[in-house]
Image (cartoon, rainbow, N blue to C red; front, side):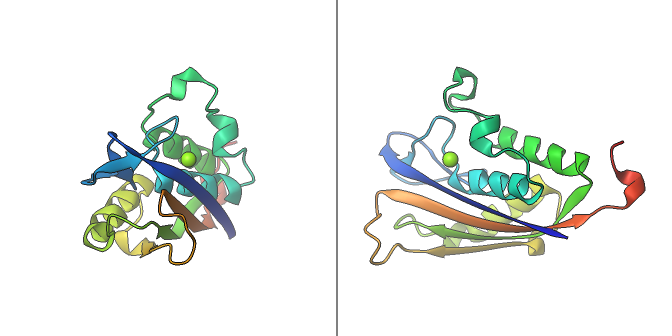
Length: 161
Ligand code: MG
């Protein structure tokens, strides 16, 4: 067994879609960034990569590379999952915490959990999601995500030689 941890933050900007956990949420602002700004998928990707001591998301997909401008963050997650498989590990469960002032995540939590579970290939009850408002943190302009993952070793014969 291994654990992985990931953190990310993005600033809210007007005029762009808000993507969190691979789905678009109705809101008057989105999250800026070089890619699609999906703060949750970025933290999740880094948690998976960190759990197998692989290079982090910024190293694999540098913002300086125009190739990743506006990129769907699912691409980053899929690369992390491939590296995880190559290393002989699978996802046991994920727990995530979002910190943002708006929109309220509660009404969307099930949809986000189901989409993340689908992307990871795990049951929805293996993806936890909590959302907090940034009380006292003075960071209403940003969305933050923390993610931990538990990785389980697959049977040796399934490992890539
Ligand atoms: Mg990011």
